[in-house]
Image (cartoon, rainbow, N blue to C red):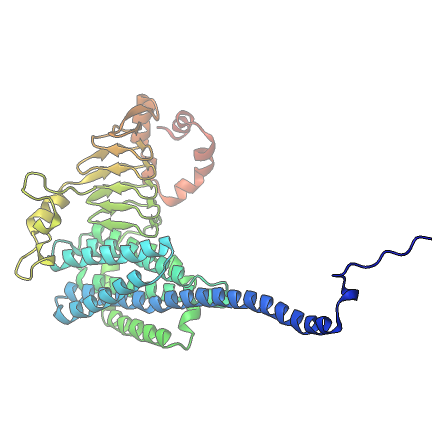
Length: 442
């Protein structure tokens, strides 16, 4: 008869009693150590993320303070006041924001937005200080910066908690509202002498920043935070100034035609010393300077129109030659240089399309209906209804045959009233250009 197999010497049943006692005590300790280590690692990771979020949140007041200081300096200079103290406050706010940007771990889009505020805000103040930018230019340049500020604040308050995110969004809109009031104050106190087209362009620019502001700032103004109270107080003060000059607003409004079109400027975009026609838009981070843009222009993101040049016939090409006041207290900005730069106008016709990251050089004209491919660098005039591409841009083909192009220009549908465009919408969608012309007598 075969005997039963004996258990291994290392089997639990063969362990001495003292080993079993030690195991009973040690196993829970080992498991506690393993799970405790995992918990500590998780807590450290979570703590790091919370610290990073806290640092970003602490940067929000720096953005709000910077925009407030920039607005105050703009308004003071525009009204002819003593800018010394306003510029001192701005310099302090700028230094604080620069420090926060350098010391805080930011998302690329948020860092870009913050640096855009610093760079373009300083450029705008330099031009205001040198009196090389008119009132309309100040408004149309500052409006895109407000949208960029909203982008920066919402990027800093990027929270999973919907309540926290909503409050961050509302704060961004509140900062935008304060900036709108500052622009309105400048127009009210100093805009009476503007020609009607320039005044209308400035008013439309301000209106273009309103939808994103009105949509979500009510919740923030109802909040009990110190920042909310401060912003309410500042806007109340600006509102009183506007109320005191309401008759001047009405006098200005009486000079305006009813504008039923609209323009749009994407976040991070800059518009300087330029006019933009009804219904035209630019996507994010476009830069339009010293340009006259027609109606219904389609301008993609990162487009540069009127790209400025540096001097090439001097010993140096750096901008210390003409922004000299930024480098020496006893040197003045070269106003003549900026005047020559502004005089070199780029002209963009109606119903044009400029593709992503294209560049239109100064003194170039794009005819009505012209199309510029993405990435092209346009150094020469482009005929109407012509499609160009490349570096430098060259003609690919006609968008429409010359005879059809001439008839479309004669029809000038871009000048039709808003209601007429709506009535013809289905024909715009479905008919060929030639059939459209036949129907509408072009």
